[in-house]
Length: 67
Image 1 (cartoon, rainbow, N blue to C red):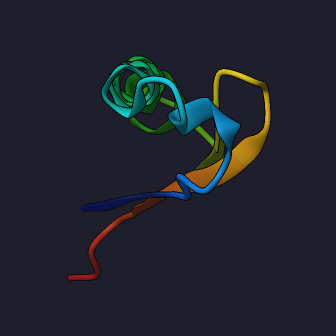
Image 2: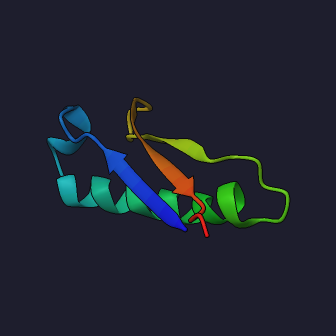
């Protein structure tokens, strides 16, 4: 499998404390990966990443490797 995490940091959410904002986003990604991709019957192959202001800033994508 391949999981791709991509997000932009060109907005106000990163001005005050970019380390805390990145930590918050990555923790959210970790919490959502299992539910979105790994649970039996999961239908998703992508989900959105949002900053602390609620703006969509990127995506997480899951791809099964071809055999």
